[in-house]
Amino acid sequence: MTKSPFMTLGATLAFFAVAFGAFGAHALKDSLTPYSLAIYHTAVDYQMWHAIGLIIIGIAQRQKTSNLLQKAGWFMFVGIVIFSGSLYALSLSGIKVLGAITPIGGGCFLIAWLLFAYASFKSE
Image 1 (spheres, one colour):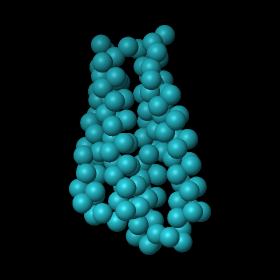
Image 2 (tube, rainbow, N blue to C red; image 1 turned 120 degrees about the horizontal axis):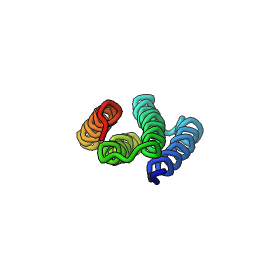
Image 3 (cartoon, rainbow, N blue to C red; image 1 turned 135 degrees about the vertical axis):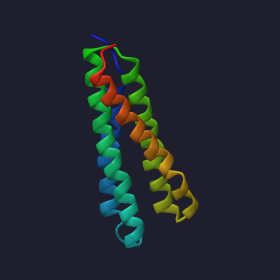
Image 4 (cartoon, one colour; image 1 turned 180 degrees about the vertical axis):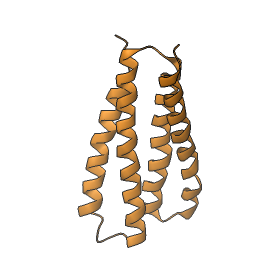
C-alpha cells in the first residue's frame, strides 16, 4: 500500500473549512457586507469540496502508485490555497485586486480534476 499525504491534507483542510464556515456564519455575519459574506462562503464551499477531492485522491493513491495522481493532489492543494485563500483575503480586507489571483487557483482545480480523470483512465 502506497502512502499519500493527500488524505491527511484533505482531512485537515476539511476541518478548517468547517471551522471557517462556522466563524463566517457566527462571527462575521454582522461585520461583513452581504457581498463579502457571499465571497467568504464561496471560499468555504470550494475548500470543502476540494478537501474531499484530496481525500479521494489519497484513497486512489493507496490503490495504485501514479505520478498523475501525485500531480493531481498537489494541483488540488495549491488550488485550495490560492482560490480559497484569495477569496478569504478579499472578503475580509476588501482589497479587490486579490480577486485577480482567484482564477489561478481555479485553473489549478481544473488541472487537478483532469489529471485525476486521466489517471483513472490510464494504467501506469
